[in-house]
Length: 521
Image 1: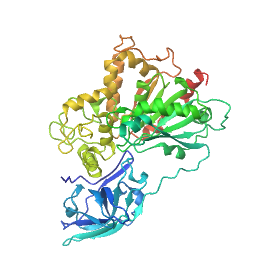
Image 2: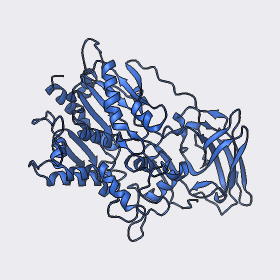
Image 3: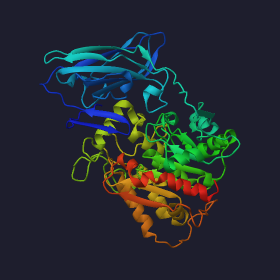
Image 4: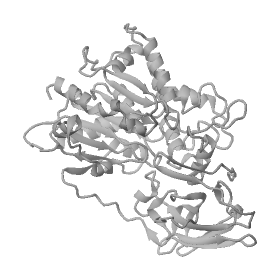
């Protein structure tokens, strides 16, 4: 089945993946077909993708611009199984496509690149050794003839090299829990940044950072050290550990998931004890602090709320949906359709209106069918959704129509942070008031502020009383007089990215230092 939408001219960047939808001038043409050859010596199995982009004089077309080239406006895909060495597959009428089929390409000059995604271990094909890709090839669609484009998967993604950066190490640990769940060896990774002026004779607290969507442990090698102020002092007083949330289904959010496995338990029961065994880390909750933005922001809120006996505070900005009455801008419990409002109007996914929720999901369907793209919407459904009898992710909504599965939506409540607060305020409200530090901008690009506002309203409605617990108390109740009290703030004028430059976000290191000093660290 093909997606055949004609969006308005637009360019957008969504969670680190560039998506460009450009309508080319010119009358209708016979379009193009793409013959992709996989050279030997072994058969090729995986998903073959072709990205076609308008040819622009200033375009810089490098293979590592994927999964979408910076100016890509068309994508096509087919699965291949044991394609013989040096055999070819043609992407034409049978290819999945967005926003239109190959035969519908308008007249004009283009460039194209093919990819064979064979690993399915990361949301970014460039980070999976063994994936293959072609050089970028120019081609032209005439008004009266079809372009026959030849692409050869001659290039191979090499093993990822660990950068050599003083004071930074990549830590890897085999995970028995995740390996047992997934039926193959699975390793946990973390980028470990030593304190400035490191003294091996003393023990240090640690700041655990969870990257946003598309990020992984290698971000530790590319962070710039602060030169002054509380941020600089924090680099001297604490280790920084960049966790790795990546999987074949995208960001795991560190939840114990029906589809990704026990990611939260693997972190706190396997990785953290192993880190504390190797490095001189203080093994106390107040010495383990959390920080994250976007998907990383949601992750650190979840980890703090679910493992209060492990972590002593979380600092989050622009988190993924924290109240599923606003799943971006959809109430999944009440709405009938993810893509359309009741009047039939398309729901925008981005505040600037460049992409609709339907368009983003259909792009992901080309990248990986039946929820396997590893991109943002599919990753949410893998992390929070159930698993069907065939071992696949149960979709929250129909990919083509957008109709929401009401029963599946109800199952999402177990990961709905706002719903958890409402159902068990005795357990969660003290953690919000004493350990959670959360900010978002009113102009968040993906409407994520709306869920935060609902969450803040639920917390405010509780007042300051102590309701009776709905479940046994946490093994380590929050301190009665926290060094850095919790808060939720919605800041006027800031968007998803500019929030990181807000004074409140720049105050995070000072607040972390307050917690460490109060703990004698």
